[in-house]
Length: 118
Image (tube, rainbow, N blue to C red):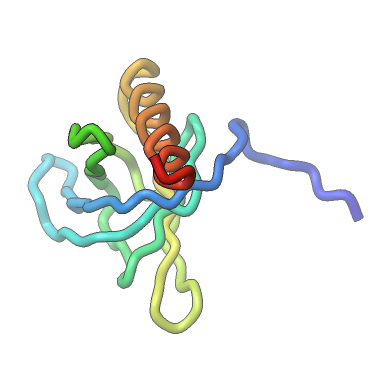
């Protein structure tokens, strides 16, 4: 049976280490942790973490190969168990199209450079 892709934007596999800060509706930090991206698209990212992300909003931070901090804000779309010790959380990016494009470009370039050993 042919399954039609329902996503608006295609996903690209990645594996970038990110730190995240869960924030409330006022932007106040309420929790933090580490994880890694599983995939990324123009609309958002899928994170793998050691615990569920239970906040509605999130700030993600990553450091690229040039030691620059890549930062983006998003809204948690879902968080579900992935086996016995990890969770998958879908993040919908928020921000201007230019900000989102810059984050995606930096994370994808960083991923491919590490994969190629550069």
